[in-house]
Image (tube, rainbow, N blue to C red; front, top):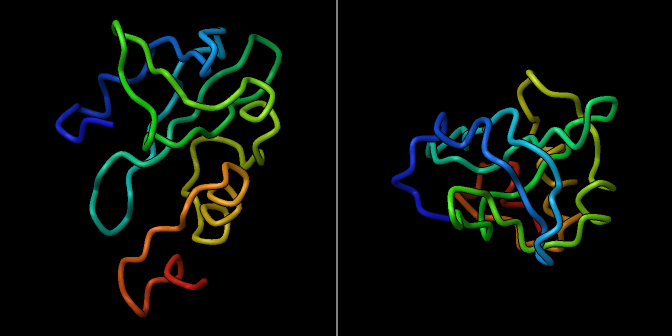
Amino acid sequence: MQTDIDPRSLIGRKAFDRDGAKIGTVDEVYLDDATGVPEWAAVRTGIFTRDAFVPLEPSELVDEALRVPFTRTLIRDAPDFGVGRHLSPEQELQLYHHYGLDVPRIGPDDPLSAP
């Protein structure tokens, strides 16, 4: 995703899956602790449902909406950690594995750098 976008500008945008089906609305944006780059978005999937965490990389902004390159089912089945709290390294690992994404390697002491 473009890294020059203000993460606050993502809040309130509609989010769609890879097939163009609406997932919900971006509720919160989580920044990487080490770099400050937007890394995850919590998407409110409905009035009586929960927020689903989606990766901002490889997602993209298309026509003022967030396009997430995964199926709605995979997104809705993502681990639920609740919003408004910091994501632990272990929770981030669970999300990376859930989406089948490579875990970023920052440095030897970074918990996310473990294989």
